[in-house]
Amino acid sequence: MKTARLAFLAGLCLAAGLAALPGGAWAAPHKFAMIVPGPIEDSDFNFRGYEVVEDVKKHYKMPASLSERISPADAERVAREYIASGHTIVAFHGGQYFSLVRKLSPAFPKTVLVIESSAPGTFGKNVWNVHRKFNEGFYAFGALAGLSTKTNNIGVIAGIQLPDFRASINSISDALKQVNPKAKLVYSFTGDQNDPIKARQTAEAMMANKVDFIINMVNLGVYGVIEAAKASKNKVLVTTFYTDKTEKAPDHLAGTLILDFRPPYRKVVDGILKGQTSGYVAMQPGNGFELAGIRNVPPQAAAKTKELFEKVQRGEIKVRNELTKIDMAK
Image (cartoon, rainbow, N blue to C red):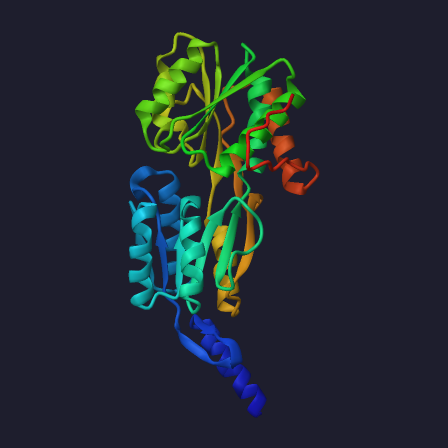
């Protein structure tokens, strides 16, 4: 009876969101916080972080807070304020915070930190890693571009030179080589994920060189690319990611790589509530990555793209993950 009663009480504590600590002790209820780099009104990357916070509140009945427009330079101050106010889980929505998490982890061993990175594994005894396998998601867009282009000129526009984007450009080139060896791939980094003017200028320069299919890796910058495509005398197709933006240019958008951070973050929080202070979750096709809104392309291109995406999801295609440099398929 005594053992059963203890197990019942432990179950009650876990259901209430209490954290198991080494030795069987129980800490105060968890409080969750997330730091995001931009405005949640972007209907894009930062909005996806906001969705996680709201999901934590609703699904776990856990207090959850969000700070937006936080630069990497200011993130340490904000994180320390959260920790001082009793937040036991602090998540950093963006790979630009990686170095900060490595710094804070040993300084606050009783706080669980969550980072979104471009690499597998864990990065501290109290760090959960959400590994964003962008390269696997964007592989299908390489095929879509190669099968849809009429000029055999494909462009990729990114903002910051993150390892995720370098790996994705490589995987796009691999898929392109597979389905259309004659196609040429060019890429450009604007230096800013959220600058639509720079993105539009970059897109216009590509279009002047006969690029007729642009794969986007920018956030708010995508609206500049869309405007350039709409203004072009020639038909130019564009892809988006994070959220579907078909309504912005229904005649020019070819597809969206939907990124939903809620499924991987649920795995993170579930693990933390079980007492796991560190862990690894792969965010990839089938777990946070979905292909949507394929349109304005030949039917066979759409069918082949979906087929390849599903093969990646099932593990039948192993996508190259070269993070350190852009080394396109020859």
